[in-house]
Each structure stands twice: as C-alpha cells, then as structure tokens.
Image (cartoon, rainbow over the protein chains, first blue to last red):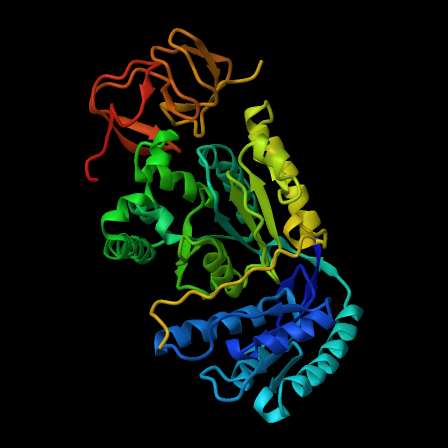
Length: 384
Length: 88
C-alpha cells in the first residue's frame, strides 16, 4: 500500500472525489456557475469553447472535456449544454460514461431555460454529492498515478533548485512503477537531441525530435523577430548562456529515466514511466491538457511566484528560492531554496515524497485551499 | 559552512554560484572542494570547476550545453563571452 485513494469502476485511481459540473459550450457557463454558487462542494468546469471553431479545434476541445470528465479524480459528472452547439452535452456524457462513473447531461433549450436547468442540475448534483460522500478511500499503488510537471514564472534558480528536485521525485515515482509527465514543448527547444537519445525506441526518438523541431519553426513563424525571446535578455542576464541551457533546466523535471511515449495535447499516455505531452509553454493551457490526459496530481515549480491551481487536480507549488517561499507562503507548498542552505537532494526528495503521499491521501495543497481553480483549453485557429 | 556553488550533475564541469563572487574569493562547493575565483562572477552565473581546454564541451545537467571558445581555467566565469554553440 502506497497511499489511500479512490478506486473507480474502470480500475483507475483518484486522489480526490470531486463531483464536477461542466459546460459543453461557453453559452452554458452561466448555468454551471449558478449551480456552483449554490453548491460550493461541486467543482465547476467552464471554458470558452464548444462551438464556433474549425474541426481541429472542436476535436481538441471535445477530447479535452472528455478527458477532464474521465480524470480519476472525478467521482461523478454533470454536463450542461445549450442545445445547438458543436459539442453536445449528451455526446460528452456518453464518452465519459464509458468509465462506469455516474454521468448525467442537461440541455438548456430542452429544459426550458437557465433557471429550470439550474434547478434540475442542483437536484442531480446534490444526489451525486451524497453518493460521493459514501465512497471510502482504499489502499492504492503509485503505479496507478500520473504525475504532471510544469514550470511557470521561472527565475534563474528554477533550473538549479526546484526543477532538479522535481527530477529526483520523478525518478523516485518511476522507480515505483508510476508515470511522470513532461510538457511545454516550447521549453524543450534546444534539447531535441538529448530527449531523442533518451527515447525507449528509435520511433519515439523521431517523434520527440520532430515535435520539438516543429515547435521551433512555429515559434519562428508566429513570433517572427521576437522568436529569440524564447530566451530573453533577462534570462541571459540571469546567467543562462543559451536556449539549450535554459531548456535543460526545464526538462530536468522529468528526471533521468527513458522516454516511453509522446502524446498529443490532452491525450493520456498508454505506457508508464517518463512520458511527454505536447502542450504550449503558456501555463494554464498546459495544466489543462495534462489534467485531461489523466494526471491526478501536478508539481508546479516557480521562481517568481504564481498562485494558479486547477479545479480537479491538486497542484503542489514548489518555490525555487527561500525569499519567494517566505513572501508568498500562502501559495507555496515546498521550498526548494533549502537546497542552497545545506539540505541535501536526498533529504529534500524524501520530504517531498512525504508531502506527495499526504496530498494523495487527501491533504489540500495551498492552491486547493485558496480555490485557485483556473482552466483554459488550447486552440490552434481563431474562432469564426 | 554553506556552499557557494551548486553542481547539478556529477559529470558537470561548471557549477552555479549562489551569491556574487569577487575575484580571488575562495568558492566552496561539491564535496569539500574549493576553487579560487579568477573573475568576478554574478550570482546565479556559472563558474568553471576544472580547466576546460578550448573546443572542449561545457557540461551542465550532465549534458553538453556548448563548448569552450577559448581555454577556460578553473575559477573563471563561464557565459556567452566564452561559451559557444555550433548552431544558434
């Protein structure tokens, strides 16, 4: 037994037991929020998508919302739709129902408006909350856990203290049969040869090499003369000499084990160990993609400090330096700055694993306590 | 006594100083090793842990992050002025 979690009908393991009310389209957000205001125990998922996009974006949004519903931290799901959108509530509900968890759908145009839908939704959500309350935690194994990693608001020490510490935790989790997920393709630019060398097979090596090269070109196409900002004057002033050094400081979060799989945005891994998901460097989009890929918990490192959290996945916030940890104590869970003050990497890793175990068993992270629930779905084209 | 340089991977030939270092200051890091700084080195910047011949790889995170554009003696500041990359 590694920790106490919630076992779902399909065998997956949750570390939270959230009842989620989700909109299938932005037009239903008001109803979802109304249910959330009156039932603060539910987690609401609202977003800007669900309609008015091209087929590629609809596909991404659909699989992101489905993935969030399927996330093992979700005990039960109520989807609220409008009725004329591209991503119908019933379609999302049917996709998630395959997990065996309780799923319901409501459509505003069929129910006769927002108030009637809110009332009906409250009644469903109340029942789901009562049922979820009766579920008990059981002994679960780390091998069923996907740990997402992300960095945001980085500083010169992120790649010296926080990210190497997370790498050490990643190696520990993989040694226990679990999965650690690296993301933020933009921040892998310059390390394509390192990651392809670490790939488990030549095919995976080619995938990661091509993915990073595509991202490199995209950064040049979109940012144009600003592409060099991927490494900024501030980075260089801070002591980083080139993009590869900066990116090495980012990918060290995944530790040192072989790369087992590369997946698209919001697509969950099929293999255990070290995996990569293609997400943007922009934090909220990246965090959302990994939660949709089934990650139950995330480690988020920061040097400047950020309060962000996620509705259904606890974020463990790691400060790269003691000054940040002390000034933003209400938002930080771990101080990696200790590594500069005489604490060894093994002791810091052991303490981190202790906290990870407590969080998996139900202890709230700072972002959960502060209800910093933020979510954005990635898109590739403008709306129309 | 607190270390003033962090070495991330045992293979590395550069470390990161965690405070501003003055020329001739003795820098403590790794396992009871000391280096005399040859340059002033700004906080969070890199210091050469050993002599790195011109053209040799500069190793951080256990990986080559560039090569020495000139002979870099132990204790020197390592940055864009002497760390070169093949493709930019």
